[in-house]
Image (cartoon, rainbow, N blue to C red; front, side, top):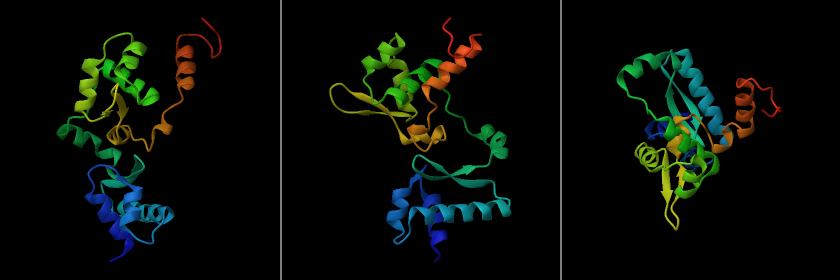
Length: 176
C-alpha cells in the first residue's frame, strides 16, 4: 500500500471534511506537508483522467467535492440548503460574534430569533454549548457548506461597511 492511496481512502471514507489531525494520526510518519503533497498529486491524477471530483481543504481538513461544471446535474438531484434572510442574519451574528447567547442575537437583530435558530440547528449549521445561558456556535458543517477552512476566512466586517456605503452612493469614509 502507498501512503498517497491511504490518504485518499481516509478522505473518501469520511462523511464531510476529514480533519487533517485525524489523517496525521492514521498515517504515522506523515506530516502536514506530506498530506498536502499527496492531495495535490491525487488532484492532478483526477484532473488528468477527467474525474468529476477533486479534494479540497475545508473545516481544517479535506473533503471530496464535485467539480463546478457538474453542479447543474447535481442541483437536479439534490436540494441545497435554503435559508431565509432572517436565518442568514442569525447565522452571520453567530459566525462573527459567537459563541453567543440567544439574548445577544435577539438584541443585535432587534427581533426574536427562535424560528431561525431552530432552522439553523435542523440544518446542523449551528449547535449549542450547554451552560447558563446556552451559547450558540457555528459547526464544521457551516464551514463545509460555505467552503471555509476556519472562521478566520470570513470577510472583515469593515469590508462590508465600505461596500454598502459605496452602493448607497456614499464614497467610503464619508458619513451620510
